[in-house]
Length: 251
Image 1 (cartoon, helix red, strand yellow):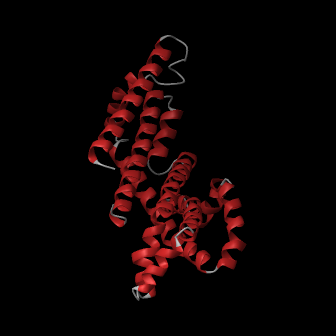
Image 2 (cartoon, helix red, strand yellow):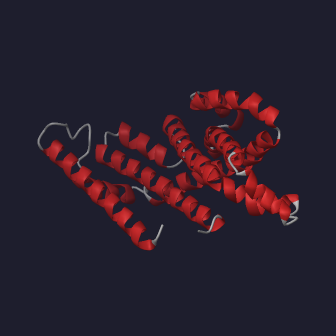
Image 3 (tube, helix red, strand yellow):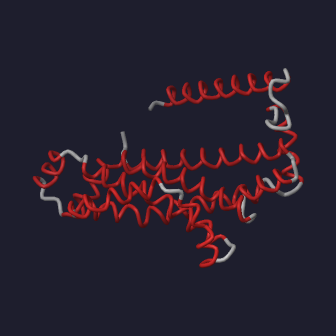
C-alpha cells in the first residue's frame, strides 16, 4: 500500500469515527440513551484528565501493553514451531487440528482460578492466561499458511540447491507469512481480551483494573476513557505487526 493510499485509508477511518461520535453525542443529548449508561464523547477529554490526575493513565497503559506483548510473544514462541510440526507431520496435523479448533472455541478465561492457585495474583497469571488463548490461532494459521505454499516455489528453491534451513527462511516462511501474521493479529486480540478480563476480575494489573475501579466508583466517562485506551493498545500492536510483516515480506 502506497503512502497516499494509506493516508486516505486513515483519513476515511477518522472521518467515520468522528461521524459515529457525533451521532452518539446527539443520541445521548436527545435523551434517547442515558449518560449514566453511555458516556457522551464530549466528556472523554475531562475523563482522560481525571485518569491522568489519579495516576491511572500512563502506568496502566504501559502495564497492559507489556502484558499483551509478553503473552503474544510467548504464544508465538510456542505456536509457530508447533504449527510447523503439524505441517511437517501431516498425520499429527490431521489428528490434532480438530482438537485445537475445539479448544479455540472454549472460554479459556474461565480457567483463571486454576492459574491463580498456580501462579498467584500477579502478572504471571495474566500473561499465561493471555498466551494460552493466543497460541491456538497461531498454531492453526501457521499450519494453514505452510500448507498453502505453492509447490512450485519450493521446487524453484531446490533447483537452486538451497539448504533446508535457507529454503524455509527464504521461501517457505515468507510465502506463508500472510497466514502467520493473521494468526498473530488474532492472537494479539485474544490475548488482550483475556488479559483485560483477568485484570477486571482479580482487580490487578493495568487498564482492566482501571475499568473495574471506575465501574465500581460509577465514574462512567472515566470507565469509557479506559476502554478507549485499551483500543489504542490494540491499534499500536496491530500497526507494529503490519510493519513487521512488511519488513519480512518486502513488496
